[in-house]
View 1 (cartoon, rainbow, N blue to C red):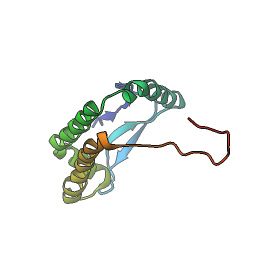
View 2: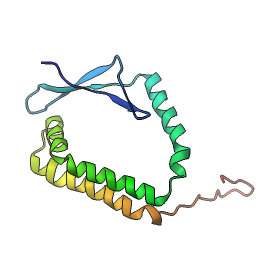
View 3: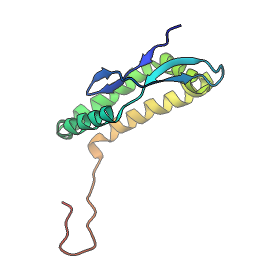
View 4: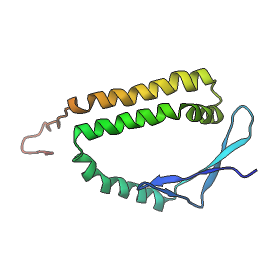
Length: 135
């Protein structure tokens, strides 16, 4: 049996590496799929891609961010059976926990993040020492 290999996702592209490892079902001891591992070079590529994406993300308006969080929640809900099955295979939890509790909590957290997007405020702590600024 050939196992599906889960790729890395870097800069919205599926990336494979020479490093792959089995994901074992704890109940059966059998490999359920393989996962790609990241080399140092691929890890740097992922960090560089995230850093390059940040300026665009930081200019994204709250309404668009809210839409993205809600879309993620919708997709997770729509693919709930698939996500539940995968979690059960990976961790051997029962369907009630994976598909009931954890799935619902994950969807709820995404929806809560969407609800708070326009109310998030932050501040930069001031250093104690005079004449030093981190702004």
